Image (cartoon, rainbow, N blue to C red; front, top):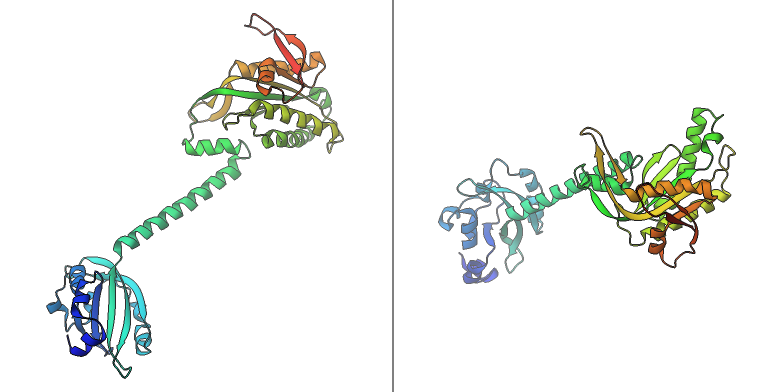
Length: 357
């Protein structure tokens, strides 16, 4: 190494001690230049070329089939203007192994400010680039997954609740049975058969859709999940599949809001609709049922059957909302519940007391 370089760059010991690969070339950038005049030990370790082999060569010796030579288009112009040039591309070790090199090249000036050499600091960033590539792939996979999830929500959310869509995606299409205490709400239109006896089928479907849209909002706003539209009836659960510590209270609030809404709403057909609602709290199981080619998600259990039963008792008792004693115990003092009668339930030795709120 010449004495000028030793004065301008650093003592040899400093260059040898650094962990980053360093090359110094002559200032002549015309082909076949520039010529390497110095390489430190880190360069030897990174490339496999010894100092003796590399000095006098062009840095182009590191290039190979996958080297992107377009990155060098502005190298000469920038260096001649005394600017620092930075880039990253594939280079090759002495044994032909490809690696990703990132480097910065800066001019070295003499006391008069004339550029007489260039110093290149080089880094093997292969692992970092591979990590970035994997992160980008993971990001693209996540975006793709979110797009598919959004598409599924848009498509299947029209038929089943989004909470169930999420579970279906997470469980690869099969929802394992979920046994827990929950509150079930049954709602049925009052006098629907007589009301629609002289309506054409399209008008009936339009009326039902208008009614379901109106009634669905209070249920879902309180965390309820609608499992089925059965003719003019609705089956909804609270605390299945989405956990809700206030499931009973939320079911009662949804029922009261439904009645308040129907009291003031006039349907586009001019009809005025009322609803009977039955609510019960108890242990039930939810999961996918059906054949191997067609599955549905629903709830089963005696607690579900009892809610359907007391919904029908509204007609006999002249009420609009009936809840069981199990639901009354669960809601505590949040609502004023009044015992209004008893019903005999097949398979039970004692009648069930029902309440209105």
